[in-house]
Amino acid sequence: KQEVTQIPAALSVPEGENLVLNCSFTDSAIYNLQWFRQDPGKGLTSLLLIQSSQREQTSGRLNASLDKSSGRSTLYIAASQPGDSATYLCAVKGGSGGYQKVTFGTGTKLQVIP
Amino acid sequence: DGGITQSPKYLFRKEGQNVTLSCEQNLNHDAMYWYRQDPGQGLRLIYYSQIVNDFQKGDIAEGYSVSREKKESFPLTVTSAQKNPTAFYLCASSTGPDDGYTFGSGTRLTVV
Image (cartoon, rainbow over all chains, first blue to last red; front, top):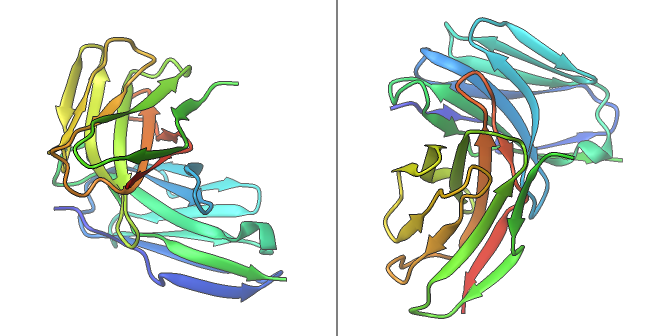
């Protein structure tokens, strides 16, 4: 059974700092990995999607990397801003549950302090 | 703009009552999904549909039912058999296995 872990559960940083969020998964036979942000009481907004054949994806100040062999993905946020405050979730498609099975982590709650 | 619309945003259910959550998408996506989100837990899959008139149970389907009569619509009914329905419900869609998910804005269901 695929398990997805995000550590830490919460993170507080001063504005302007570069930061890294971590996502670990137990089964490396994945199809893709997607990073989302969720604001309180809202739905999930897609940030980046990395296919299993890719090593990284970039969008603006965000960069996501994928290392299947070690079962890890990182989301790098450059020059953090208060507007980046949200919960960040990773979702892994594939693994022993079948290629269509998507498993979500419980998220990292980020607070960027002005 | 294309997207997924969930309604209502807030829903209150009395004991023993069935309620239906709406999910409509204009993205022309084939696959649609319903997830439940509880504090401190990851999203859990309730039901999914990969094509019109076909759907499969997810990990926590007991007490829920769905239909997929149109490509654009995938309503979820929370029945009285669901003993702990208070949660945040999220609908998602995707085009296929290479695609990621697009989510709606969610419906918060509370039992009163």
